[in-house]
Length: 502
Image 1 (spheres, rainbow, N blue to C red):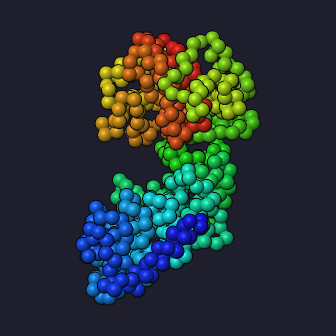
Image 2: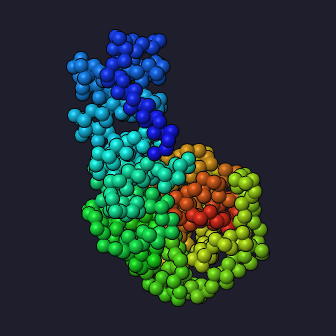
Image 3: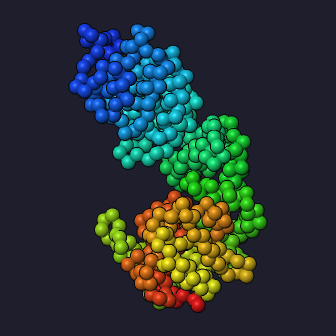
């Protein structure tokens, strides 16, 4: 524990001890504006935080003296401790008093379990919640601590997080990835209403935390292959089967929680596509590094461009680079990278990043966006988008049985429309894109939108979160679009300006 926090907690504990013992001749410390009734003062957000903090001890003295109902007093203190907009010292004092009440350990344990998933609202509150749970052996709080740990905190290193210390104390002899994976396998969380599924949220948070702890997926590959030594919830078994088959058939471990859900949907809803993809991957001579976003490109190439499977990374990239040199690209000018420079969109800018599978996928996307039918669809959709200022339009690029492609539009639902510069992928779109090549959206607010040609920072974040290959079509004239393909790793390749079909 950091020294500042040790001092803070020691000071709070000391103040509580004094409060419980009584520290004024009349049993109370007066503050300007205080009513003299601690319950009233605690519920008064206009009162100075020092007066409300003092009221915590005053209220508990009344409980100890038999002058106030214990249950009602606890409810009052919980109502103070819960809101993250309350002063931190007030919340901490209320929690310390609540946790000092060993007659109500079950109620305190339930409170910690409810508060932890949201991180407690501050590092110190989170530390008090997590370490109290660890010290008292409240192992059922572990899933809630994992959810708290999944909330990324830029101000503190993961290795210094109180959640990590608490989890290790609860599970001696286990590593953090093993503990988090065990929570993924068995969230030990009441699912709640079907529309909410708290257990799914715990699973997703556990997987997202593993993505941070194990960015390459190598550690999780070992955990997936090993027979689990912990219980597996029935609700997790379909996802676990999808993980095992994805690893066995494609040598793929999904990184993010969104990508995990994509793999699980494809496994359960697209058995024929899965079998065709498995056969296509088996045809690869080497064992290239694949992600799930590459699988459809491999499957399509095996059926329609088999020579591409035998081409080297350099050969594929050389073809893309030749295309760039022969065409016209329009660089996005609306925003810059953090160091103030423009983001590179040429193959040469990403030579250290692009893998063989990336090169193949970009080649297949290039074939898709050149398809006359796709371009005619984009022309129609750009017109619809321009006439609708409530949202951006988008959808999925998918292969059709003839070897060509289609651009399937999924306009955001009315409740999901943010503004004219934001596209939101609906659940319908996600459910129907398990076997798609890429997600796409339009920058078509005006006929010539060349300043915004390419993905925004928000678009790049979506690609990283979803694990998808993405495409943005930007109108740069009445009958032309600039096409950019971008990936979860942040790479952007400008495929050039194309005429829209009729």
